[in-house]
Structures are given as structure tokens and as C-alpha cells.
Image 1 (cartoon, protein in one colour):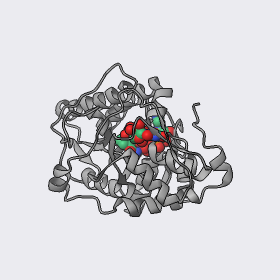
Image 2 (cartoon, protein in one colour):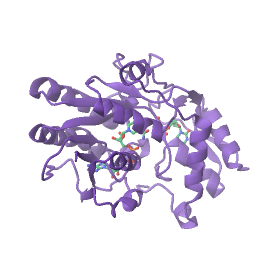
Image 3 (cartoon, helix red, strand yellow):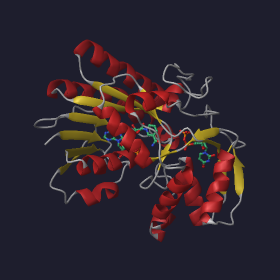
Image 4 (tube, helix red, strand yellow):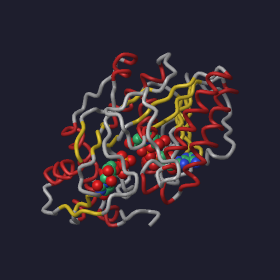
Length: 322
Ligand code: NAD
Ligand code: UDP
């Protein structure tokens, strides 16, 4: 039986990856320090005989006994308001944490896939973003702690590949959504749905003309699974190219939830990217992958999940580092 270590296992994406690898017949070792994650996301897995969990900060030395075939490094705050509140931890998990996991991959002779991000393109001057674009990042701006940690992560991953012959994979993830996002994580989809459910106005940052392209989580997980098992070591964008302005997205959420609330404009955060759309030519060619779940279906499934939360969870959904 193949053994896979998934860091960030109690988070949004990590928990879905645990589900997928268990379903594929792997022994899954989840690791998380719960700084932005929640054990609730994986509590259904504790009864599985092929699942183990370590409560551990991967920025510190990582030890896992026994054989390891694959490592998926997904530990990192991912929402702008998370990494603004915990900037040093964000820098450490992308740099020291990645270094620890590459070292572990090397001694275990395991293949490692690291979770990079569309943020390596910064506020992009090229549109849509292809993997060959080097990006437009402000290293000392508020988002620099995340963007530069992820850029360092890519650099050290390539160095371990080149100098130590470690089998590495790099996925550049574009905005992904779905069940188990934290209602209070500040990202636009849980923010809007949470506001609609609590009967608050929807907060658009800036004039809402900035764009994003939203990918449903099951599509992303499929792309990551294919990339891990491929023999391709250069970065691959995984995301849904269907681009929308944040203003139109707010209108979609209003229609979806049937809320009577209005939208209100708040100041645009510094360095907020104005446009973002993945060029997925490489994923199509190398992995034969493309997204299959459109936004209306993905939003319907996600809303079902949020609607099922208890009134107490809804009330307590102010941001946790506030
Ligand atoms: P999340 O906050 O839900 O999950 C991250 C998990 O990592 C949390 O459970 C958190 O507790 C854990 N973690 C953070 N620091 C840790 C540390 N030092 N040691 C151990 N565990 C730690 O975020 P997510 O959306 O699931 O993102 C997961 C990964 O995917 C991140 O690396 C993120 O950068 C990347 N990513 C996500 C998106 C997206 O749209 N969701 C986009 C681009 C990249
Ligand atoms: N955004 C918004 N209102 C909110 C939260 C976010 O208008 O309550 C905007 C944000 O400024 C950005 C977009 O939505 O332009 C996506 O933000 P998110 O934090 O989800 O992700 P990222 O900026 O990392 O793509």
C-alpha cells in the first residue's frame, strides 16, 4: 500500500485531498498545526484504518516513521486576511516548512508535490497568465509575505530537483472554492455567502471591476492527482479560466441565496490583483485535464454546504484573528 503525507490536512484543500487519496486506496498521514484549519474538516476520517493524524508545525523539523511514497505540501495560510494577520508564520511555512519537507522527501525517496499559487504572478501585466510569465510582485507589500514565500518555495523545490534529484511537482493553484472553506477566512466566496446568510450587506472591495476565475474544488483535486502521478516537474497552472468581475460575482451570490441585501463598497486592499485568469494550455496538454464543473453547479453545491451550518457557527463567523 502506498503511503502519502498531506500537510495542511485539516484545511480546505488538504481535507479534500485526504478524502481523495483514501478513496484511491492510499494510506494517508495528515499533518496540521490547526492555525487556520479545523479538525471538523477531517473528523470523519479518524475512524478510517488507513488514516493517521499528526498535530505538528511543519516549520519545525518533521519526522514521520516508516515508508513514504508521496508528500503533498499544502500547509500555509491561504487567505489574504489570514496571511496579513500571521505574516511571519506564512513566510516560515513557505520557506522553512518547504525545506523540511523536501529534506524528508529526499531521505524517504518520496515524490513531493508543493502547492504554489497564482499569486506568484502578483498583479499580473500579462493576461491570461501562462506558466512562462515571471510575474509582477511587490516583495515588501502586504501580500509579499505570501507571494515571496511561495516564489521561494518554487525556487527551493526546483533546486532539490536539480541538485539532489528529488522527484518534484509544482502546482500553481488559482482561486478555488467549495465546501469546508472557513466562513470567516475572508476570501470572497465565504465572505459573500456568510454575509447573505447573516443578513448583512455584501462588501465589495474597490469598485468590483477586478476579476477572478473560480475553480470548483473537485476539479482542482483531479488536476493535482494527475500532476502527482505524471512525470512533469515544471509548474502547472490548475484553475478554471471562466473569468468574472467581483461585482458580477456578488450579483450571482445575491441571486443564488435570494437575499434582499445590497452591495456596499469598501476600500480596495493594497496590491489587490486587478485581473486573474489561468492559461491552462499546459494542463490540457500534459495532464489531459480541464475543469468539468461550471460555476453555477459549483456554487449550488457550495451554498448547500454553508446552508447546513448551525446558527451558532454562523454567528461566530467573524474573522478569527480579528
Ligand atoms: P486553509 O487555510 O484552509 O488550509 C491550510 C492548512 O494549513 C490549515 O489547516 C492550517 O492549519 C495548516 N497550516 C498552516 N501553517 C502550518 C504549519 N506551519 N504547520 C502545519 N500546518 C499548517 O487553506 P487552503 O485554501 O486549503 O490552502 C491550502 C494550500 O493551497 C496552501 O498552501 C495555499 O497556499 C494553496 N492555495 C490555495 C488556493 C485556494 O484557492 N484555496 C489558491 C492558491 C494556493
Ligand atoms: N473581495 C471583496 N469583498 C470581500 C472579500 C474579497 O470584494 O469581502 C475581493 C478582493 O479584494 C479580491 C477578490 O475579491 O479582489 C478575491 O479576493 P480573495 O481574498 O477571495 O482572493 P485573492 O485576492 O487572493 O484572489
